[in-house]
Length: 566
Image 1 (cartoon, rainbow, N blue to C red):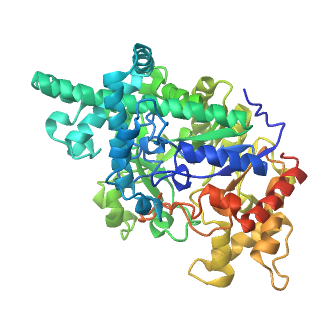
Image 2: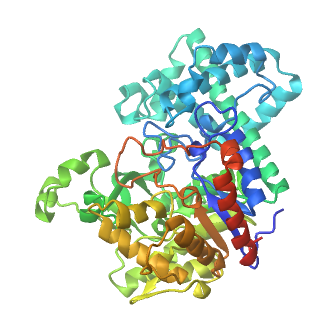
Image 3: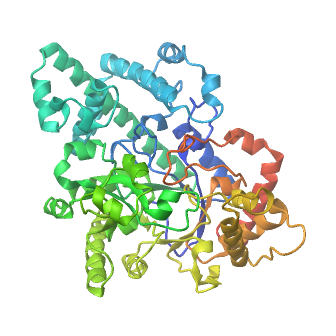
């Protein structure tokens, strides 16, 4: 068991798994690349790797809009010779024969081709397993299926139905006989025996993929422990409307409202968010129904992440207290964007975006939201056991949330440029120990991009970038006004030293900030083509051998030692 007591300050790196380039990956970062990455960060002195959610993604490839809250994304699997006892050299070579690996490995993630290729390899492995597996391995697989029965069979059936419907997860557009799990099971029973058998085998295939995924991820957890590195997972507050979970248990969700976040002036490059907020399209929870079932779905969700990670973050922890709800699906955002409030009400027959279950506009409402949020979070903590929980408490945060999270032992976030009292930037030595300090997350512009906007290539958001950089400089005790400031030589060491020197238990650096890169992995509120596809330009092997990166990482190591995080 790793010692992750907040008494010992440590530092980590946040990296989207898909962005890593491994020695022999198939066009996307996987558990093999993660193994290389763990070795690399351990040498530098980092003690933690934070990942985005690893659940199976849908058509938009967003880790925060998964088609299952439990199933692992198959593209995270390392598929190579010797990666599975079910994969022979002949089968592996046959599966990759038609693939242009060189093209897959350059540039962004080409999800369609990568998913198709990995599916083909896994199908070969499953065929071999079905034909040749020892009794012992077959028993292991059956045991896994029984242990995960609460979600696995419904998920596998959902995946089969997706294949019946052109790989689409939008179950409300499927034929009528598929649109509910009950009707779909009746449809299945009415098919000829050979067709039923074929679909049963296909369900077994999807269960097999999950079995292999759990084996690989548990092995990676053990490997990280050996290297003294903790893995930090991520549970999104919501789950996709078009998910196996909603399809199988629709009574536990509110399907005619969509969860999101209220209007926020900070996201200057997203006009819809500034005007209306972020509409994520996630269904709301019927907490009363969940309570009646002892919150079983949430318990399974926490168990799934706890097995693979040493600690985990809850994305948008504010949703447990109250969530901003929209009466329209995200695909209609464009129609609503130009409307004023009255026109919107006309279009929605009087249903307006609002906080659910209630606003925080009275002390009574705030107290009720706090009480209920705490109840739900206690369920998460109960199921987490010794696994530490972090709450992403960013955005418009009610006054009661952070004290309540601290009382529960849940670490919150400190973004230095947002930690401002009046006009004063809060110094790092005043951060609560039970907190996570970081400059950026996967949703933010990297610091190097802010710098370019502010001082090198002005844009419409340059003023905001200058304001953010000024606050970061104040936090770091750095004078931006001196002549000829160089980002790499002067600013970078100052801000990294200040972050590591803070009192926060965890100091986490986004991979793009660590490498001083400008590209983004996601632009919130948009469906930009590059969202969730960007990969680090160099492989981990290239980063290790680069003299420039070696010099940078020697500096980082010295700063980690100086701050007592190594």
